[in-house]
Amino acid sequence: MRPDATRAGGSVALAAGSAANAAASTADAGLLSGAPLPLRLPVALGRALAGRLAGGAALAFMLAATVLVAAYATGAPSPLVPHSHFGFPTWMAGPLAFVFGHPTAPFEIIEEGYSAFLIAMLLAYLVAVRAAGSLSLRAIVLVIAALHALLLLVPPLQLNDLFNYLGYARLGALHHLNPYAHVMLAESHDPVYRFASWRNYPSPYGPLFTAFSYPVALLPLPAAYWVMKLTAVLLSLGFLWLLYRCARLLGRDPRYVLVFVALNPLYLIYEVGDFHNDFFMLVPSLAAVLLLLRRRDRSAGAAVVVGAFVKFTVALILPFLLVAAGRGRRAARILIGAAAAAVLLAAGSFALFGAHLPNVSGQSSLATPYSVANLAGVLVGVGGATPAVTHVADLLVLGLALTLLRRRAAWIAGIAYTTLALIAALAWVMPWYIVWALPFAALADGTGSRRLTLAFTIFLLLTFLPVSGPFLAAHGLDPFTSAFGRHVQALAHQLSG
Image (cartoon, rainbow, N blue to C red; front, top):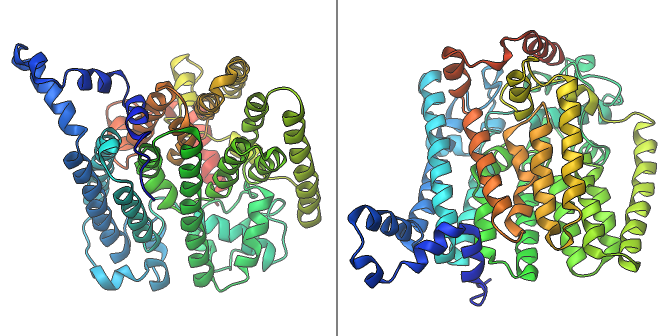
């Protein structure tokens, strides 16, 4: 693949925003010759950060830093791998344990070092985004592929949702208990139980993903673990290929789009590095955009429903596809495709799971301390993300979506803004949720949705650092000191078994 030379400059300028345009316009030495030194330095710095050398250094740093994390994650039980203190078998550690040996350090040092790593990754990412237009597409693709290959060989970092997926799958496929009606406590002797976290909680995962995971669960646990990891990494690469195709069709610079999404540390470390099932919805949601751009409207509508049967949040894309298609036959074809897929998938779900649905209502009763909704509830004096706060937030998201649907030409940006608003409205927020908005912000016209996505990335990364909670609590900034916070903590403990 080669970069499109006719599109490269313009799209990157859009992404960099007015500051980049200002820097470019003052690049002429004559304009700077009479400028005071404080003005010359920021301009020179901006030009240096947008250059090939800075971009290449950022990519190299990301590779080197990820290798270092891999060494500590695979070497021995550590806070990098949740529940590894319950057992860290060789099949979980992976082959890199034989390459790097067994480097160890006190848990506190590892947590501090990992926090510093994430901050450094964030800074390198921002430099790479700034310099994307000076990098070759081949270099970007090679670095992305190398990072995916490296993370494939590393155990899930910080979170253990992969074992929750396998736990629910084994509950149904091996123990013949409906994961939407039973909890993992019912089969506590299963070897996956000690690695899982939602032990007293019916599955919140969509029926299509659960159906996929059933055959995998029939494999021995080590084999199923690696099949799930490999599937997530391959889906990530497939998703990025779809992103590349969408960028070309929309006239965006694919270099910038790929860097903006694939090198985002929340995407790279929390999504790819934790092997989350969001890829099962990201692929069909982005496929729906690509199919719409190719005027394959029925397939576009069906793709949205496929994603919604993994995570229902994908359904918010459908109204924007209808707006993009315009009134008439195209919109009707999208609805026909969506309806046909919904009927088939609903019938399949009923055949496998009966009338039981994913337990998303249970998850909505939980909260994370630094979600926007919880912080808003603390600020208004109700103690956190109470039902009243989340109901108001939901209404605001709906109002925003209806407003954005009127801007037909900016339908991709509308998806990005609405998704970001949805993330802000959720009481329970995890850092990788940003990946729901990343591809649409990258593909959108203008810079507003990208800037907001970057701001959200910084906020989520900083608030989820291993050292952030203890540091903020030590300075009197613990949002869970209220009665609501204590209730949420007790409920989370109960659901974890």
